[in-house]
Amino acid sequence: MFGLDEKDLRVLLIQRNNEPFEGRWALPGGFAKVGEAIEETARRELTEETGLKNIYLEQLYTFGEPDRDPREHVITIAYYALVNLAEHTVRPATDARNAAWFGIDDVPDLAFDHNRILYTAYHRLKGKISYVPIGFELLPRKFALRQLQQLYEKILDRKLDKRNFRKKILKMDILRELDEIETDVAHRAARLYCFDKQAYDRKTQEGFSFEL
Amino acid sequence: MFGLDEKDLRVLLIQRNNEPFEGRWALPGGFAKVGEAIEETARRELTEETGLKNIYLEQLYTFGEPDRDPREHVITIAYYALVNLAEHTVRPATDARNAAWFGIDDVPDLAFDHNRILYTAYHRLKGKISYVPIGFELLPRKFALRQLQQLYEKILDRKLDKRNFRKKILKMDILRELDEIETDVAHRAARLYCFDKQAYDRKTQEGFSFEL
DNA sequence: GCAAAAGTGTTTAATATACACCCATGA
DNA sequence: TCATGGGTGTATATTAAACACTTTTGC
Image (tube, rainbow over the protein chains, first blue to last red):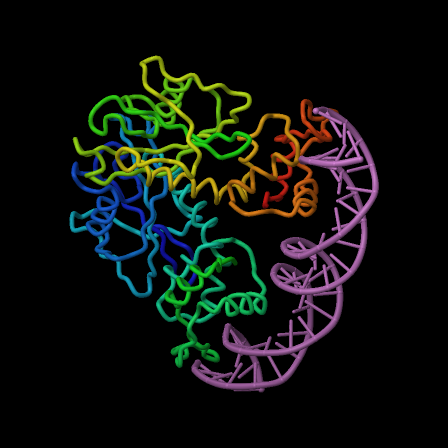
């Protein structure tokens, strides 16, 4: 689960309170139930562990080496989720487990092969954000272009030119310019925009493809 | 499993001789063993059903809706494979099951949700072939540029300009020009090339990225 | 000699890149 | 009044697209 705050791309980790790897940080997750669609399992676990519903969720990859779990052969169908931290509060599970957001560059040694899973997810996010408009899932519904640009800069890990970035994204015609501006900023307030999914879907059907 | 002949992109199907869906065509596959890495399962099944080894194999997606299989809740971790039909002969499994190559546009109603799985695989192939050099897996080791172009035309399902295509692919410097030409063709023989994986890997490390 | 595909350059349009200043606002 | 980010345009370089003829070879 990825979230974005003013500074960093962050990942939600949960501290294990059972063996194996007791005390270690790990990705949130749990076991599937027979008769439950696997995406439902992912959503259920997500809600149980964070209280979040209706957020962006996508299957990542399935990990099935026999020694991933020291107890027995466990197959993990990994999903990743995107959430905007400004508008969703994570309410950790009731069962006393410690949950925390870690900056993507400050992630410790995790339980099992979770560092590898996380790396795979970050890699996917990095690749996908340039050709599918999923970045908006990490921002508040109404955002300034600066926020969008910083999001891309953080995830792609390189600087972008302000004028070129604005030109390109606005020319796509998939942002709706709102009659609102930022509040509570210590400088000139920026105009707010929101992602226009209808426009995006329509244009996509007509052959348009997002690219940044 | 995808293969390419002179005419078409083809898919290997196997006719079921057990319930459910007895007599229907289906994607090749089988059950995983506890203690076996899932990619190993895929490779083992591939070899058992076709005799093929050492071919390109990549995890596709995991399908886990509870009603996919009328008998019980089965989770399928789908892989797709690419093979060049000119240099590999498919030797169907010994157990009397019928196996055949179908043109991608002539695939019948398959067992289970296999049409959906196949569609997902085709979609992945179509998307991936433009930015990862996996197309070469479908061609003989030595090939003419015409063959490569036709491959792209078939998979992307649109015509490409001959001069522009050649310019672009040759400029990448990832093909090695061989001192050989085609034989047994009823017209002027074309120069043969092979994919230079070393060069590709080196250039990739230096920041190059394939795109067609 | 003819059918079939190989091989080859140039022009034009579109897109990407590089780059700097004035403006509005809150502290 | 100063610090901070908002907002804007142009020139240049790069890349993509469109387009047609001559050459080679086998039959």
